[in-house]
Length: 222
Image 1 (tube, helix red, strand yellow):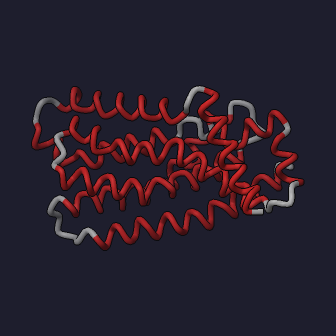
Image 2: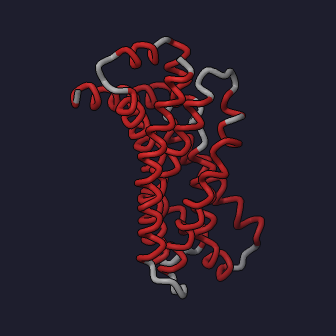
């Protein structure tokens, strides 16, 4: 079962790279968003530095939605999902494997490149480190939440138009605590540890609830 789990992760990563690299597309969108915001706000570096974590987090939330609708839909279209349903691997572990592969291709690059993009919004080294840490802790929650919407729309043509409407409201708590933790590291009134622990708890809760919800949605659509 462990071998099948790891093989499924490797398969999805190979597919992501073969299709054209969803991770590269996410990074390009992330860069475009972070680049455009300073043009809209003007050259006030103090303002950009204060709202820099919020800009990076908002860009990460929107970038996570790219390709999310194909998380299960591609397998539904080519019949692979039927084989996965009938495999010895429980459907919950199938969901976890696919979510991990999607996060490794999209969420992890966002967190790792956050310090580089932080230069565009005049973040201090402390702000870059805090934002990177919060993205590493919080982007899994975004992916698991998105997996539920992707599972619900896996049998719907053009489901990508519906997924953001379903999952964006559920991503707001993660966005709030992610920005709060990053701002706390820059000298806020709240200690960094408190919102960071809440952000980590949200990711753990989303991993459990998102896995069960996505598996139930896939069984319901069978």
